[in-house]
Length: 609
Image 1 (spheres, rainbow, N blue to C red):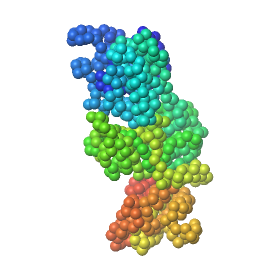
Image 2 (image 1 turned 30 degrees about the vertical axis):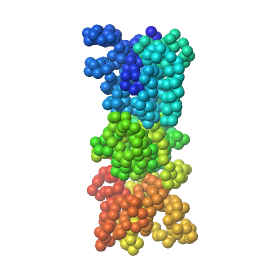
Image 3 (image 1 turned 45 degrees about the horizontal axis):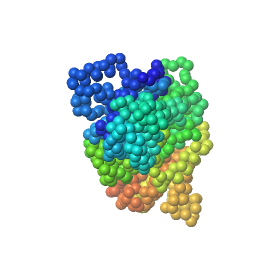
Image 4 (image 1 turned 90 degrees about the horizontal axis):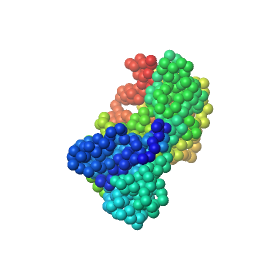
């Protein structure tokens, strides 16, 4: 019997996986008993049930507590149990190994910090053993140890153990999973589980229990870098309070915060909390708070606050591992809603790299759609830049769900950002924004004074028609008291570089920087883009984000048909009516204040209290 710490000082999430009947539940039952973690009378109760049923007692029955499970002889649900040893409490997820219940294993293992993978010494490495190893890789679990169980059935033979270790270690290495150790054991007889066994004298490594103690605990939320997803922005008295839950790290009054993906930054003036006097000077991971800033910067729900030296990543293209539970298949090209922390953004799958069926453990294959209960490695592209972290670094900002037809249909983790044509421009814009010299007049103050947010309106399509509409739009906006300006292509070419063409990447970059200066002053900039390519549109958006980019296509489609248009004016007879529709679109996108909305909630994303 192992001495149990009276009070655990830390917790670790542990998942136990492996082929059906390889002894996972027996191993856990033995650990429970040998660490003295069983509730009083639990062992005797299970033993009495076995006698009543005329069967031999098995340690697995301590976990397979339901009568139905005992009769079937398999674990049919993901059971969470607990035991303590040496100041640590293990939250154990006993994941089913039977193929019909593998989807429970996926959902159970998703929150684990470490994993034990159990292999029967007599049966050796099985197909499900390989699939479970692959799933651990997909779920981002890197702390893995392999227990070669039932060594008693092979007479504790060392060559058998070494052959299994060599085979399975090589397989896991291919998946990028490097098991920390292989442990021979017999859970039924207690060999090498909680204490060394003379029958395994040839093995000099740690026991199973000691192996668990060697797993490294992830840093506490307070010690991680700051991640503060914005839940809402409220107006309270004269203050604008940015509310949210600190996902990790610590924020203090006076800290300079950077908000991603907008790259806005300011210092924390105060930390707000209800019914607290005096107000706190700091807040740590897990606390729901509000903060006020020393500058009125324009921030929206879904942005993530961080310290300047450790911001999250920002991208539009992500490689992910996803478990699909939707009623209809996940298909390439179809629009979905991606939710990450408090951020929601439209997205689509642009590549499905490989799939594993979590219901029948079918072989890996490549398809054009992901079916229910399948786990896929895929590439997702979001409509707008999104702030994120790799799952292995930050759990909260590294996992997401996909919504299909208002239902949460899939959950996934982010493995890496996939560079795209705009990555360098996005990084350039971030460096520019972080070093930008701010003024005493803030973005919100300008918006309130002008009655609109800054924006860029690009008109594409028929040259003669878009030119006429642009002039009419500028005239209408200025007469309405808006701060608007029409950029002329000829003037831009003279001012930037006479020899440059606007469809080159460098000219597009220069154009984006010019517009950035104008929108920073609070203007609505109108520009006739002519034949706009998709890459040009994406480049401009990367340089201006989060300034709204409103694309209006008038007349026949010109340029790249794949380029996105917010408003299509296919049949324009009356320029005034067409401009009415453009203004309505600007109102819909909260660029112009809605005259019927007296709270101005669309223009200012904050709620008055």
